[in-house]
Image (cartoon, rainbow, N blue to C red; front, side, top):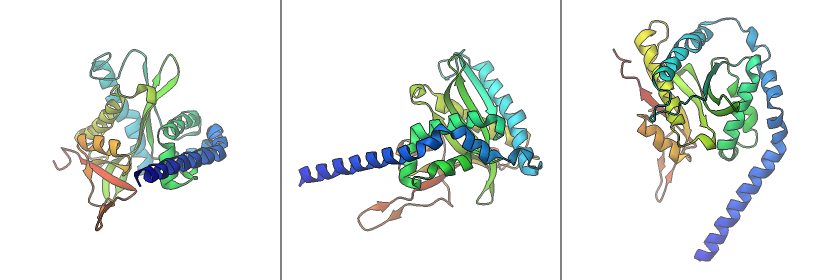
Length: 266
């Protein structure tokens, strides 16, 4: 019986891998031509009228985030507790046509890290949906590059938004290239993101209302879920929840996590 069960598991794993290969074979032409698809998605967005929404984005991207990054770079280069070294280059950008190449690099990194899980959860069209999401006007990107190689080490993207009527800084993506993992880069990126939220609450709360940082994580990504909880996140009240059945616990596809800002109620 155990032998049959093991054989069944091996078969299911092979089917899953074959499905991933076939789907990517069909959609990699889009991945190879990603910049063109991103540029098409961005058509017309550069001409959007300035709104309160984009004004907040620009304030964060042009003033608050650069100040936070500069503070970290100036106090921590080469420090053993950070991933920053002399070859580190930070790049801040927003979804505009001139940034299509940088957005394409970010999506390729997502594909390498979580492509198989995205296909499993969202189906073969996940890449089209991701391009649409990655070009939303309110997004702010912070990329970390190897200056000598021009290689993307990792990135975060986030925006100021309303989540269940709460004004939050919402983390859309955080990804680190495999060869740069376990070097505290992910922790440093998350620290920068949290510090931006704290600066907003401290210095800009009259312009940018904010009560928390928030994000979505796949329930199957147990390693990431555990990591976020260690960073002070909890499952939000409005998140999908586990369902306890008679003999098992059925998890939702994803959880919404929230981290309340310490000064939010002051």
